[in-house]
Length: 162
Image (cartoon, rainbow, N blue to C red; front, side, top):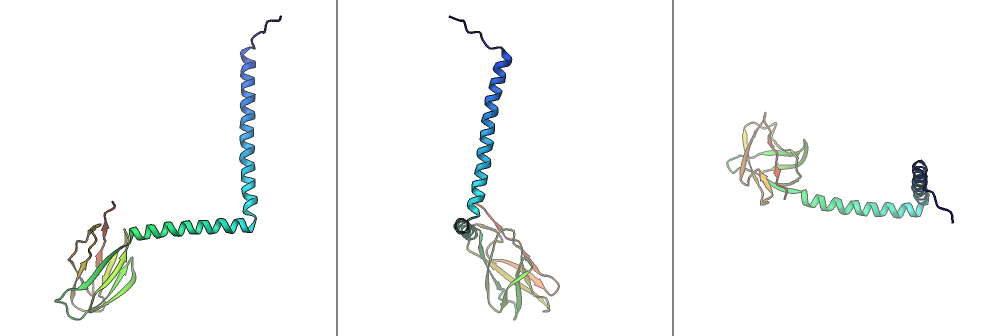
């Protein structure tokens, strides 16, 4: 019976490196084949349409949940001592409501800048900001802001995230 001689260190390292190289080559080939198969599947119109509809449905649901949780509401009304006043309420410099002798409710999100613009009318006008949402830290309900022909009232609401 022949005695088996142990392999030298260099041969053992070379065998291990060869096995590792084969494994990495197989993994690379599997990845490439997966990419090729997915590209082929996306080239078929029915598969692509099904995937697009699924993506749109998921994005729509996610957007609705986010919008519902982040949208808050403020009510703006002229102070009782004001005379007749017409003002534009703007969010991020875009007019969203015209306030004429009554109140308006506007929806906003975090980091929106709300402006009350009475330019073109002489005098100083006061407006009451109101809400009943405890997650709005600023402005507090019943806060008054002043605006005039040369000065717009700017409100930067702060929403507490829970």
